[in-house]
Image (cartoon, rainbow, N blue to C red; front, side, top):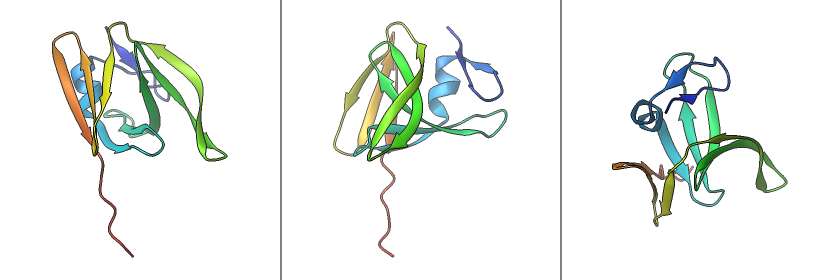
Length: 100
C-alpha cells in the first residue's frame, strides 16, 4: 500500500507517510502533513479506511478528495490522534499553542 502526495504525486509507505504528520488539531479533527519530497503541507482528516483532503470553510473542514487506505483506523485522545494500520501505529500529538 502506497499513499500519494496530492501535490507532487510521490508515493509513500504508511510508516513514512504517517511519520511526516506533525500536528493534530482536535477541534477541527485535522492532521497536518508535510510531504518529505516536495515540502507541500496539507491538512487531512483520518477516517476509517481513508484519508480525507480538503479545506477549512465556515468553521468546518470540507473534504473534497479521498484516498482509500483499507484497514486504516483512528482513535481520538485528549491531546493526540492514534492512527493504526495492520499491526503498526502512529501517534500525532496536539501542538500546544503558547499565549501571545
